[in-house]
Image (tube, rainbow, N blue to C red; front, side, top):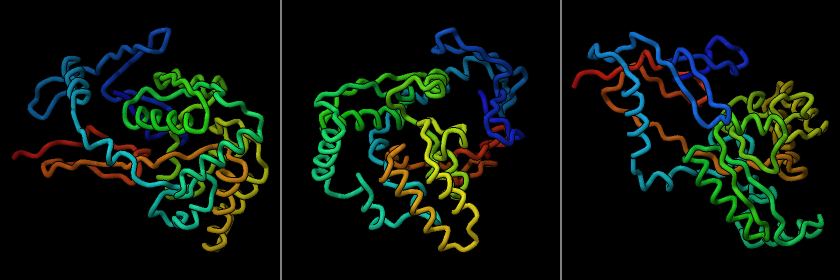
Length: 285
């Protein structure tokens, strides 16, 4: 229906794809899309609103019991598994919360909460994204983990535009972010979000950390690969261990089914990269 404008260097401008115009209800929970005319399938039949609705019905009805098993796969830091600057598992496990002893981690979490003066049963609201996979499963898991260290969490699920408005306005206790930095191979793009709020316009934690800013500049300017790796490690430790401005959850295991008849489709290394669906078609059997 919509896509990111491929000519927009900021990657923030949304333009119509199948939709030529769209509008939301005042509460942001209902949307109306007006389809472009003369859009045709490979058999020359014209696309209708009924076809669009049928596509969503099919997607919603898919019963894939194994999907939740493979949805989350790796535990990562600020760079994804397999990327050039990814932290080795043994080193990652030295960061707070990354160890394999879950019991010890929960005991330490309770100690830190008590030290900070947070009472048993402290309540807050977690604002989550209204998409079943992976956010629903992630929300259930987070609430359960918080419960096991004495925190009482209520989940509020919001449609994306509403959630973004709340996050950008600072109207949240804890909220799910979806920057997906670990799937971006280039550290400059993956780490820019975590600079101080007056440097990065997408730092939704609103933190100010001049040490992180300097580490970001250092890794970005490094010409030696090992020097850059060391700066990224320092950045990662300060962000996720020393200060904990943000918490990285599971890396989403991205699964791309590919039919042998599919033509014109490119499997990109990141779902941030745009794919033009009007160039995709099914070859005859």
